[in-house]
Amino acid sequence: QVRPVESGGGSVQAGGSLKLSCAVSGYRDTDTYVAWFRQDPDDGPGSEREGIASIDSYGYPNYARSVRGRFAVSLDNTKSTLVLQMDSLKPEESGMYYCAIAYGRVRGPASLSHGWYRDGTWGQGTQVSVSS
Image 1: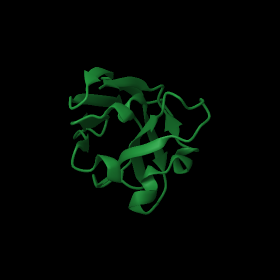
Image 2: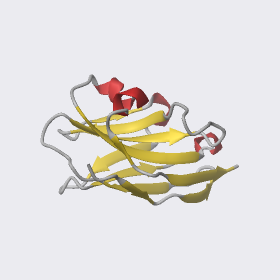
Image 3: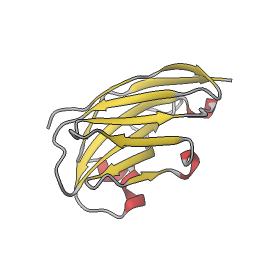
């Protein structure tokens, strides 16, 4: 499995926007989930990552409650680029953002669980910094 490649991170002020992209391969017509996760900068490398948004084989998105209405996840028509549009960013949303792909069947909200992607493939991450 080819590792996803994230891009688009950067520094913005609170209330600003960023658009993250993830080049992903191996997307299947069924039983595939691709998701964005955030790791707090104060957490160790092995700590649990926070699920932000995911999208399944049918294009159905799931969002963490904290980002609903502000973030939007989408997959392009070729199913090779996952995009996360982040608006009205908050300082506490700073961190490293990772893209991950995994296969299987899971109920929608569970597709935001870090543990479900343990057997999946993760990217190297892209840094987001939101200043107050």
